[in-house]
Length: 428
Image (cartoon, rainbow, N blue to C red; front, side, top):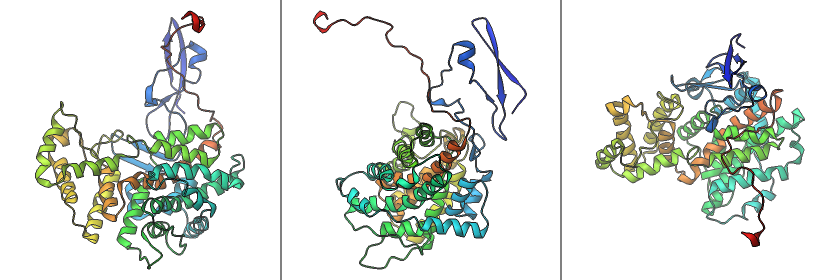
């Protein structure tokens, strides 16, 4: 906490506000007493200049291209760690010993199965339902099946709910995919890794044995790690806002999934892949580059630049290498992958893109990888939700334990009609 104070003068009256300092990052002016002192609110659409909470989980410096989880750089975690280890880190604050990691992984494995009645729940959806619609419904319904972990005031129940959500999300996601393609659900195999189990449940069939490809498994584990948490983004803030009312954890995560579904948030990698398909072949790239540079043309290159990162997205560097490994391993022949590689080179070398810092971001590469593995674009946001559940759960737990946390209640700048008397309908 800093010793400075910020002075605000309004209507001839001055008032001082404490300036708080974090361990790293910009200082924060504590305006909690602003309304009491001045009768005024701040106006901040999107809350882009407002710290809604104190957190120890994730730190982002967009200008420098830095993403830290509990202090550890994302590229080190993605290259050297595993998704399960990162999940433990986000939940508990420190990297686990081998024994603790093994125990945590076993605990998650024991929660991978879904209540059998949920299979019937799936069959209530139309076959052509979007997998994200299914995810919203099924995750929200978990509170109707697991009553013994919905008391948010009981630390043990919070822990059980956290483990259940992380463990069951791959099963829920795989079943959403299986339902959409008309194939039977595949039960979890707890002898496999978290990521290997998910791949088997998604692409395996009862008629033959499914062998997990280690290159694909490693790529998926990296994708999960890179999407595990991203500070106070829209879906995480939604989870915290829902949780601030005392809602059960399953409802809070379902709210996060609903927010993530929005194309401005979770749909970026799908949009990037659709753009590659629109371009189609390498010879058409110059035409689309010219359109992207034309201010009067509505076309925009998707998967380049980032709202937060004004530098190279640190996650993209890891994904670039992984994309090459997966494409080489699978030997997929598709012109859109040639388009992706050519676009990447142009973006990294063309002065227009370099000056505007329009580097390929994590969504550009993850869309290419997921398509090569065999996921339809409708599953991309589902995979994002699967990975981000870890971050949502960690943030929700932190919020519940924060003595400063209050129910979310943003204020407004009212510009509607002032007081007027009701006129009966026959006199209007």
